[in-house]
Amino acid sequence: MATEPGRRPGLARAPGDPAQIPTVPFRPQDVPTAPDPQVRAARAAGTGTGTGPWAGAGGLPVPTTRPRPSGGALLLTGSLGMGHHVMAQACAVSLEARQMRVRTLDSLRMLGGPGGRIGEAVFRGMVGVPGLYDAFHFNQLRTGGRIATGIDAVSSRFLVPRMRDELTTEPVSLVISIFATGAAATSRIKPDFPGLVTVVFCTDVCPHRLWVHQNTDLYLVTSKTAVRYVRRFHPSAEVAVVPAPVRAPFYEAPTQRDARLAFGIPLESRCVLLMSGSWGLGPLVEAAEALAATGVWVFAVAGHNAKLARKLAALAEREHRVIPFGFTDRIPALMAAADLVVTSSGDTCSEARVIGRDLLLLDVVPGHGRDNLQGELEKGGAEIAGRDPRALARSALAALDRVKPPIRRIARGPEDWERAFGIALAQVGLTPGR
Image (cartoon, rainbow, N blue to C red; front, side, top):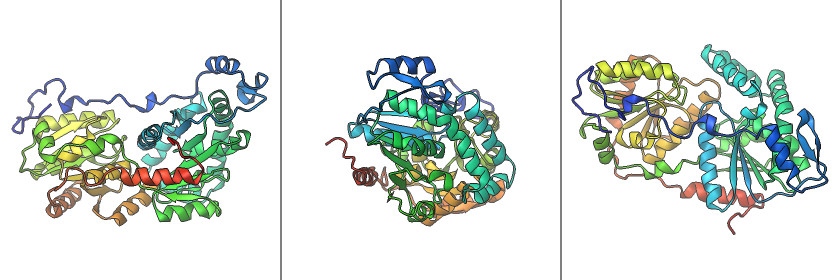
């Protein structure tokens, strides 16, 4: 729904207005885990494979004869933020276009019990303490330290039997791990499933030790630097460099004019999209207020951060140039309407590049986020800003001075990704759709 440019502070918003914090159908909790034990047991009893199931680790049924791969694909994601789910969605679309049956499972939730929730809580806690996650990432994850590998081993102890059961009852030809926990478990069970192709897809500039496992047939990465980091731990690894896939709606974004008319943004005004992942990290409220005070219109997206969403909604009641959103599926249109995207490093950067928008990057994600930020800066079309809201506003204004009006609706299409992905699949003997 359009937002009236001259809306007075305090004016009530109509139902459906962006300030209502819209959501989208796809949420992390929508990614299924492995079926519950009763369903698995029933499925296994009806498959007709082998001589019947026997109790494996954790009481899960495992047949004595392994089924052959079926031609389908399993994608393993993880519910830390939304980045892994977004990549899984994009990969699923490409595989389905190649006539493969695809299903996606959340490897963290497959741990069972409170394991996944504990993992997310620990990660959030570490990110919230300045310097703590940096220390853990660079000292443990990057190098494969004892603490990191110990956590990996414990996770696999729970995940391996569930993965084994999942592949036994619903065989596939291909497993793509888009989360390190899934990569570890898949490597451990690969010898039990002859013909299974295992792929790890990591978009980090510097994949850490827990991404790399000896029983991986192919690694998909998005930079030459990442190739070297993989081969640090797996010298003979097959590695393919591919563009980061982007979801279809970003290739269908409207023109800037149409998007601005839809949101009620004056065509001649400056406008930025301000967001920082699904967790809404960083000083977004203060930055939105500082930018609006200079006359810039601000789309401010809180993601799943409910506290941040409430603060942005309150700010919008006194500053009409701030238009708040929660977790929304309207990001393609918001990017199209904006002149500049202010965000943290992550999948949002690839999406903004598809639509042809310059980036102002927030250095708010520690550990791998700092590596990825440097990678985005090297690609061009991006600047970096500090955490101080006033300094961030100055950086945004300077970036807006350099931004050129868009001359095309879309800056790049999906062809490069589809071509590279197809070549990579062929490297491991997969030519689906033929």
